[in-house]
Image 1 (cartoon, helix red, strand yellow):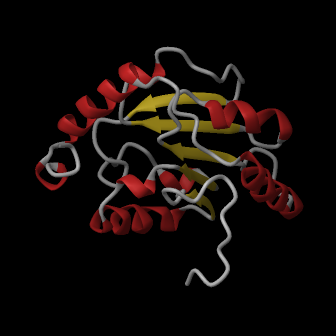
Image 2: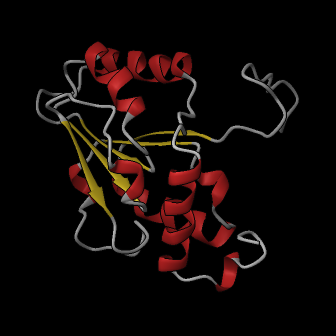
Length: 168
């Protein structure tokens, strides 16, 4: 029903849906750590100045990706997880000092109180495939302020090892 009503649903309707998902299916750890590490290993070679490596993650759920990533990359000085649902944040998986969480009052592309230009890295793992094309365009427009982006959108039914040969 959620997909059918998607375009007419308010932000609060979407929040209620994800609050329900968090209660019914609390384990939502969807990322491929090997590719995340490859991305951050590449960023390591760029030697981002100390204090400038600030990550903003959209839809980081309980912080599982941050918990896996931060110990490997001490040059990341801040990791902000912005979430739609408060229910997913009741038990944080990340205890790292650089990690914090903010529950959004509206979609990231609509909120002015988060200055994306203060973040050098965007992480969106298993989140954009839940958006409609118009929302994705709005998000990408806001992300023009961020220098490096990691976006992972798993394709249904492909398993954990996706062969992109000939995909485009």
